[in-house]
Image (cartoon, rainbow, N blue to C red):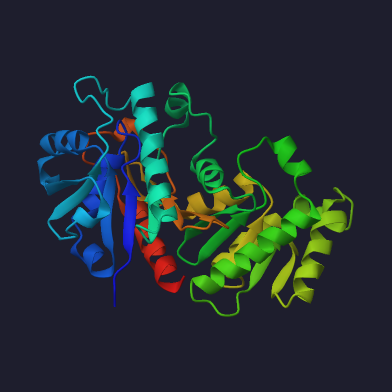
Length: 342
């Protein structure tokens, strides 16, 4: 079977992105399931390898996908030449790094839209750095939506058998409450159902979280459930979707982690992010390091496949050799599955 071609951004050049990219390419099994390559700067990767010798790989600079070798022991890099390595300050916010990170992203989007690659994976960028460079976006999701002309999309987070999609993400909590509308809730339920089928689950079980404590307790703590969420659920049921809710927010996630649901529809950013990161991020107090930083961010509803690490730029860990590549490997794995089942 032809292996899918996966374009992976290097992320902010001053971040842990270059390091975890090199670490991921050290896994031979990566090349057994896909054809991965990096979109970034060779000069940055060379510098990181000098500082962390155990990450040494043969770098193969390319200018187009057809030049890639996809061989274990080497890393194909679409060399953007965006960085002056002598002026790059690792672990710090800069417009130069923000501009590079943004253009790595737009490049992989264009490659996917032109069908030169089967899926895209993004390392973390720094929103402050990107905005300093004049690219005013809240994050990756908004870049992808704008670049692809997509209006109906949502963010999905996944860690093992716990998956979450969001009615809203990068808005204030006050605005998030205002965005809980029947049509949007129904749209996200439908997107979630389609995504689960694409991941190989033929009859997905979907749990919908309430917005208010105890899902409003029959209107005692708010009326969004009665006016917006329940009507959306009823329409979804009429469409044949196996959906339950609104389930109280403080119980829907333990139920999903226990196998009651294949995916949860969360009403806003933190409602969905906190449970995923609670189980996916593990900090070792003794060693003062993150022993596990796993989880995948997937943008659903796009005409192309996009998955991402579910962590930030971690400037405090840059060039320490301690950055964890689990989330990146999981992201590549999800991108591969989605590409194969598309």
